[in-house]
Each structure stands twice: as structure tokens, then as C-alpha cells.
Length: 192
Image 1: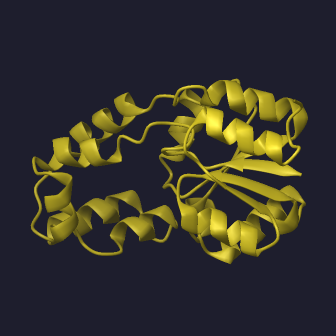
Image 2: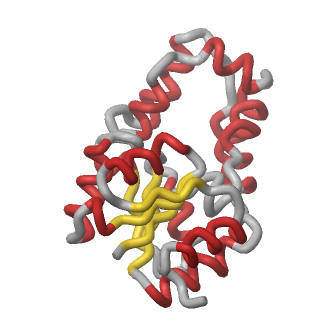
């Protein structure tokens, strides 16, 4: 059995919106209306290099400061309450990994935020596909030597947990560390 945690808004706070607001000088909602559609997903899948991602923003007529974006992004990561402890508890019982939609920036997070946890990181930019695609979870299984039926996914996005459940695994929608621990206990995955 492998327990996989989503990263953003499951293990760590996600500074994504505030980083865009600070870097672009507009609200995130305004940014959503004017940004090039699909560019971020291409970045997350490794189909678009970061410099090409920012070039797409400039080509769309947007002005921004990438240094501000990255500074805000980096300073905004923080463990959600109780999650570091829950990850450690899971890792004592099962192989525990991160399964995330994220661009190459996840390497910084792995180095700076996940150091010492022993978590292996599997990311969309390496797989070339994003959750909730079944292919993401099949690739995760290939990389870890397991099948989707041996996967437990804790994720704040219901579509992702639903896909794992449909593949025969266990999908646990994330609400809090306490609620997640209760679900893991109910499934017999942690000692009572």
C-alpha cells in the first residue's frame, strides 16, 4: 500500500494566487480573465519551459515582475497544521509519497520544505500529464511498483480522489489533518 499526499493545499499552503497578484499588480480574478489559457497546465506538464511561459504572458500584453512572483511564492510555503506530523505517522506504517500537479518549482519545495521527511516526490512536470488523468496514477504506479488498487490518495481536489477510487484505490478528500487521520484510521491504515 502506498499513501500519496497532494502537495498544495493538502500538505502545504499554496501561495500561488498571492504570488500572481503581487507580481502582476492585479487581483487573481483579473489575472484569470487575461492570462493565456492552457499555458500554466503546459508548464505543469513540462511541455513549456519557464521562460516560454513568461514569454506567453508578455505576448498577452501583461506586465509583471518574475522576481516578485518567485519571492512571494517561496515565502508563502508553510506546512498546514498537523500535516507534517501526519505524514511522519503514515511513513512509519506505509510507503508515503507526494503526488502533485506542479512545475519544476517543486524541486525547490522538495529541497526546502520536505527535507527530512523521506517523501519521494512524483510531479506532473516529470510525468507529462496532470491529475486527475488516469494516466498520472498509472505512471505513479509504474514508478513505485504498485497498481492503482494499492494507492491511497489524500488530495484537496475531489476529481483527483474520485479518479483513484474509480481505479480501485482509496481516495480521501482533504479537509484537515484531523479529518484525514480519522479517515486513515477508518480504513485500517493507521494504528488506533
